[in-house]
Amino acid sequence: MDKQVFEALSAATLPEKLGGNTVLREKIGPDFSRWSVKEVGDGNLNLVFIVSGDRGAAIVKQALPYVRLVGESWPLPLKRSYFEYHALKRQAARDPGLVPEIYFFDESQALIVMEFLTPHVILRRALIDGRQLPKIGRDLGLFVARTLFRGSDLSMATREKKTDLALFADNIELCDITENLVFSDPYFEAELNRHTTPQLDPIVAELRADRDLKVEAQRLKHLFSAKAETLCHGDLHIGSVMVTDDETRVIDPEFAFYGPISFDVGMLLANFWMSYFSQSGHENAPSARDGMRTYLLDTVEVIWETFRTEFAHLWRTERNGILYQASLFEARNDPFGAEQALDIVIDEIWREMLGFAGVEMHRRILGLAHNADFETIVDPDRRAACETRALKLGRHLAVNRHHIHSLKDIRALAERLQ
Ligand code: ADP
Ligand code: MG
Ligand code: MG
Ligand code: MG
Image (cartoon, helix red, strand yellow):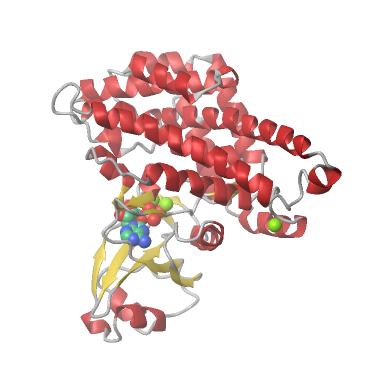
């Protein structure tokens, strides 16, 4: 394949174009005429193929120079593949075993060859089907704590951090998408928005007239764009997690950027709250999904508690970066100073996290990119009832985040709304 000119693959052309690739030949089998290729991409942006042969299978993910969901009218640079590759490398080092193994990367073709996760399914799909995965709360809590702590100024030396910040600073267009789609578009009549209409029209009008909410959303956008605290995954929703009963894997970090520690955590928890509110749209009889609802709220608590505990553990054992040096505290016989600072840092993450969760819930119901939890509820009245509850919780979290002190309170509100 010509290394310079980008060429989009298709299931038909892939074996011939990648048939000379030594890594693929080794994984799949040398005779590429015997490879079979299936396009499985269900995402909004990229091409994803499963390639299988005599020896095994691999995933080939290729970026396109435009947004797949919208088409060529919305160009998007190929370099997002480069950021996905680099983010996967860092995540693999920071929380080993949680991301797919990378076999090969071709920058000019915006192409990543990686481990085929099987029999894993997308977590969102599993939750819609009413499956209770036993390990996800702990695995995801550890993943966010480890990747976000170890990618931050609490762990990195200043040269290492600034160099990496410069690398990811070029992921401009994907940050721009989040800045608009998450923090602004839901709160006015932006062109690409859609919502369940006419059922949601009154609450949508109310939210768009809500000055406190709009101000809060912009404060959160300010944190997103300016608080370059750690390397975030950037798109950590439950469609970016693949699971079996025993294994959890995180995929698709093409939105990776240096941002607030709280961002990934908030986006993740928002997705569990949305799954919670969507359950009544999927149950065959009232109360049929009560167990699932309890499981989802429990999982939120496990993720947060695991995150907090692991973050505190790393604070005490790996805090050798730019900030809160041990030379000021532990080495001066003042371990309580470090504990005091830890409490302040966690509290700040908590309050930001709630805000990010709130706006994430809004944008999935009011903006361009909806999620299958609600979208697969066919009856619009039923769907709108679920969405309304999520919108209300989202508003509460975004606006009152400085006055919310525990997940128990949020649980009580979620159950009341339900
Ligand atoms: P996009 O960036 O377009 O959203 P994703 O990386 O999320 O692309 O992949 C789209 C879909 O392809 C996933 O939802 C999943 O079904 C499948 N997929 C992606 N990576 C893998 C993998 N490593 N193993 C198995 N399936 C995968
Ligand atoms: Mg995806
Ligand atoms: Mg270090
Ligand atoms: Mg993606």
